[in-house]
Image 1 (cartoon, one colour):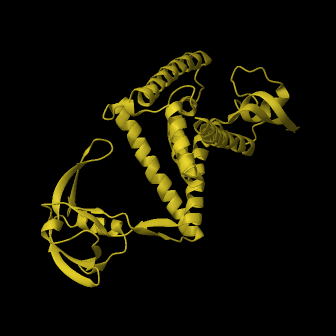
Image 2 (image 1 turned 45 degrees about the vertical axis):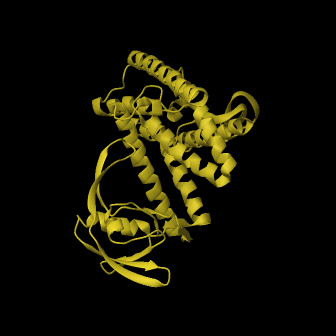
Image 3 (image 1 turned 180 degrees about the vertical axis):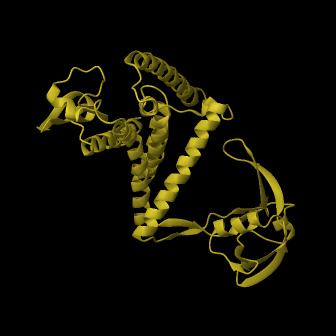
Length: 355
């Protein structure tokens, strides 16, 4: 339990702090004054004031917060502070400042993946057969466990992904498959067949396959700085797209809301990853960072996405949304988030204690 709590503090602390760092840096870049930039919440422990900004470390190490000059539209301001007031900045500058928080969570994921690729390289799954399913094209073609598929139609293969792409693109035409088995090489003709699978979103997906699973054998390929950066951006993009699709499927009802997790499950998963090693925990932080970014972009008042919605309305109409409308929307947003938190806590408790 202590490992879970410590891991949760580390995960949420890093994620929320980096999120607030995004707001802080872009606010300062665009000329908005920042009164407080806190690492943690609650009572002030130590700090130092530089200019108008009070940099502090607070007692509760769960992220942090940024307090900008003129952050609330109804704040009474000294006329001298108007040039550095958030509310008095151009609407597009306010949009950039608000969007910087979740965007920095995306950047954090890229940085983490970049570090992993630079230190550990990229794992390459070899086209090595782990299992051949009975009655499938591969079974009829004579493939066996531990065979290594070296080429298809004369195209040399080094990864499982390359092999899968060729099989999928075959559209069911016969393939000439070269196989390494021990010290011998075999050439067999295999015709892929169309199968229907269910993906993680419970969607039916049609794909041409030959009926084998991977052995899991592979190797780590070293990457240079540019390759690591490219792969980290690709990895972040893929996970972001999958996360957005998951949220959309959840809202459509295609995915059960029982799949939602809250702090208890995050703590448990973070603890599990921490016990597996620092690398696993860091990878987990990257995944949660992307999820946090997508969550914050949702157009729900209280979240960054809600503020962005108001600012885009202001940009389109030429006048800000009234304070009264904002107050009502904020109250509705808080109510929705409270209901959501209650529900995910219920899910967590049901999983941990009753599953």
